[in-house]
Amino acid sequence: MRLSVAGGLMDDVPAVVDSLRRYARPPSPLAGRLSVQSLLFAVGDGTFITVGAVFFTQIVGLSAAQVGVGITVAGVVSMIVAVPAGKLADRIGPQRMWALGALGTASMYAVWPFIEGFAAFLVMSVVIEVVNSSGGAGRGAYVLDILPQAERVSSQAYMYSVLNLGFTLGASLGGLALLFDDDVVRALPWLVAVLALVNAYWITRLPAAPHRSGPPVEEPPDAASAEVPDAVAVELAVEGAVEDAAGERVVPGALRNRGFLSASFFGGVLNTNQVLLQIVIPLWLVEETDAPRVLLAWLFGTNTVMCIFLPMLASRGVRDVPTALRAARISSVFFVVSCLITLITHDTLGWTTILLVWAGHVTVTGAELYLSAASWALEAGLSDPDKRGEYQGAGNLGSSLGYVWAPAAYTFLAMEWGAEGWLVIAGIVVLATVGLHPAARAGQRFLDRYDLDPTR
Image 1 (cartoon, rainbow, N blue to C red):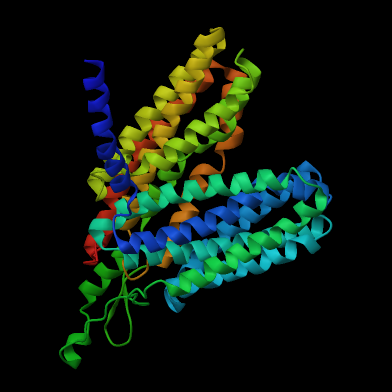
Image 2: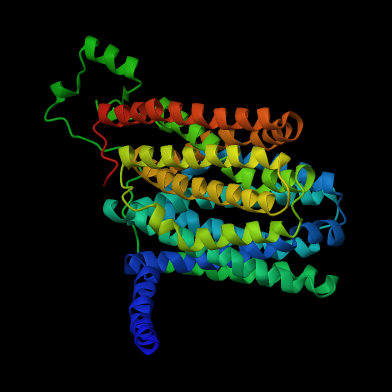
């Protein structure tokens, strides 16, 4: 009997291996090529993020407060230029904008070892953040342009898995560099610059994507048709549309799509699950529970593994705005459950605390996974296909406004108010989820009003 059981288990091994191989295979060859880019970017970025604190304080000679100020100022400037950068991506082409952003990033990393003092750091931080933001707008528009509608969410889920794998590899490489002296840390940005340069080259080798830099134009059948009756002109003005001298309709830009902007804002609020993951739960563990600090490594390791292996599973069935809203609801349930689990660890002891803190971290990672799937579908389903770069910039602006206040607010609520603070955090997320639904439908109505098809 034992031999029979062992033989049965051995017979199952090839099936399991084959199943894992199919799961690891990209949804399409194109998704595989895009994932190579994700890996190149993430390895470089993950490497520098890991050594960043040491590099800026020990090599550049900054205080922690100066580093924080520089990052904050750079983030604010990036928000300001987000929409103009997106418009530029539409004008020159998303792929070209993406490649130029990657090339600019490589140049900035090559300069980092020569930077000294706060003023130079501030300028560099602003420039590299603007360059990254501009390239990111190009990337987002290109991905929506190049991927068929049916493959957009599944392909981005696969790319997200590879991205997290790349960050893990980069973090390992950065950690290895920290074992050596300051000269190795000082030279590390040059390695990252090389990876960014390879990344820029790879972007140029991706297939060209059709992207129209202006709204669709319908030629009037004759001169008389170009004349718009006063009543129609008034109606168009109310709706936000204008016409040029030839009588051709010009569709308003992303900033006029209030539904899209509101949905981006509420999506940013939901994305504050990252604040719980990276800041609040770790602080809560150290300050308010009896859990050992070494548990932090286990928490982040669990999050990494889940974000490598589970995005495809979480995105299954998410393909359009209605299914995206369903995924957002699931995400908010995970978020609220995480808050409820974590708040009770203040009064638990020993292994109970360890298991509950771990469960809180697992559930908020579930919130991250389902929200990612929802965001990809909403991004595709609520964007004007002729202005995807501009919509990428406007979306970044809206989501940043929904997110930027959360680190300070959530930390205060959890650490100062305790259980009541966690309930307030959960309530904020519930309200954002409720608000997301009418906002997304308003964004759809805006596109329908101008006969725009976001699926193409």
